[in-house]
Image 1 (cartoon, rainbow, N blue to C red):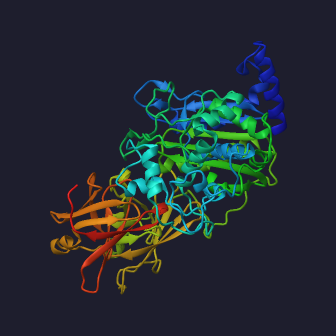
Image 2: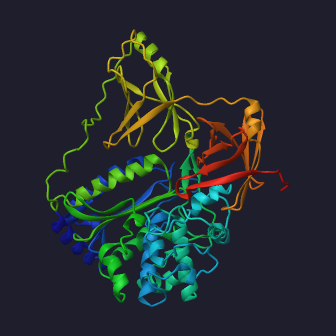
Image 3: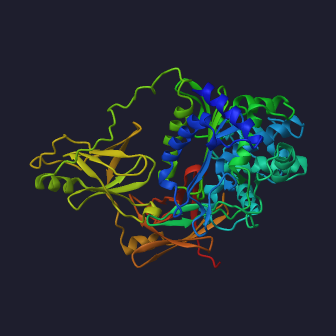
Length: 595
């Protein structure tokens, strides 16, 4: 099929240049049109004027064989998404930074094992030096600045600057781990790579990339946006969903490196051609990047999916998501076929849809190229089926399920409540602010088997007890829960009891705490039965207790647990704040000061 598509596309492209014929007018394009209609059907849910959506391109031999937008670039204005809409491609930006780093090294501006303090001496002098290679492969041990700014009381939508980001990185006197000890994703690494380019070349990342790549290649709508407040024609605005409707969600900081690249589908066609057959000088480091799609084994930093195969074909898959955007760029280099999908909304549903839909698009266009006629058999321990046969629970079974309901701790430290609601089981994720704490009703498929109804990755829930759940049989303790997702992943949820500290205990936590490593102050106060945290004399948020002496913020986009510690006399002395890619930091209690 690919051979036929290639011939038809090439012939139509020539005819189109002569204006003698359009694609829709030629019978030979019928096969391509049918494939495009099948792609359109995959994006039907977003093909309307009431929601953000996607732009999708399928590229073969440097030409579009499918190219279309679905949904609106901005839900407030009547501008549909098109191949010329400008998208923020989030972490997919890192692949472009990798190309810039390769180019800078080929030009002799710096070398892989140079110490970063040789170019940025303001950084702390760590016992083991951090090198360019460490930064490029996320093996530096530096705290992630996206998470770190949240620790300082900022949100990604706040208007903070590259100077604020650098100030945060400079403050770090301790690493999460020693350089090259292990891999640990950090946006700080990529921010410093952008700084290294600026310090050594005398040009900003924006100007260096423009001079070395985008202008020579003709990518005139692609740039690192270090001036995000500037006007931008045909901008696709980012959106998120608050559980009821779409809302605008955009980054307002000018820090680039880990993200920040703006581009269009049209320009991605040019970039795809460059990756396949670069017209620029192919010196060693850039040649290595063009060959493998990564540099020094940094594929884990560039994508959630390192080099892999899809049904026997070599595949390189870059992704990016956040701040109201998502981006997927899938290359089958040996077949010279690539698929690009940019979305201007960031929801779990949208992300999982892309993970599911892009392989389906590949299957359409590469049907005759695979080693196997069908996808590999599922390795799920229990075969998943979308067929649902609802089960009617008896009053005794409902009563038994009520007795087993309660709070659970999830593997990554989040929490959920399993409750009975309107005669069936429901799950409430306590700290998912976009869902506003609304419970998600499940369908009973049996006395101990329940199915979710998500529009993305569905799951089944089972209590870890005997399958029949006989009401007369008592349990010594509340059972755990097994969650099995449609993709075969399984998780164990541990039953817990939430703490309920009284006002007197909450007052013991009140006071001022200082973190030397972040040079940051948290002021804690107890009011009306709740604990409140004020970050650096600024934003103030309520926290709620979970287990032991741990608290988490209520209704926030980012959940930062804080855990209190006491001395031998029972006095609160400090707390640990631990947040994903920023590791654990210590805040020590000290006498209250004025802001």
